Length: 78
Image (cartoon, rainbow, N blue to C red; front, side):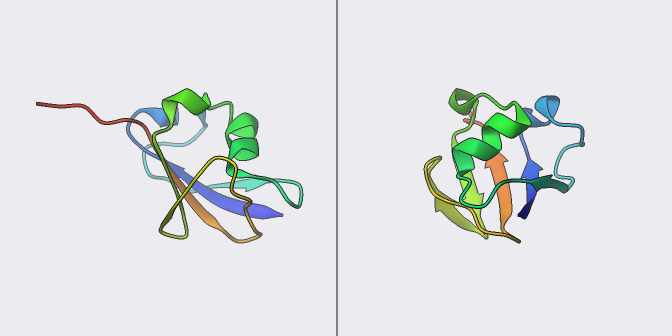
């Protein structure tokens, strides 16, 4: 199955796209968001928020073909 992934806030250093650009990723059926992170080589501890089709999900939630996934790191600031 294919999912569309966008990464933000520095996570693009792990994938071959620029900030906010879409990347299509092929995953096996039944793959989870955690599986996606492993395929991308993004350390799970560096991801604070996972949005799937605009809704917050956990790393153990399954993905479906055609899902749009956005990954965000923790944010700090003053």
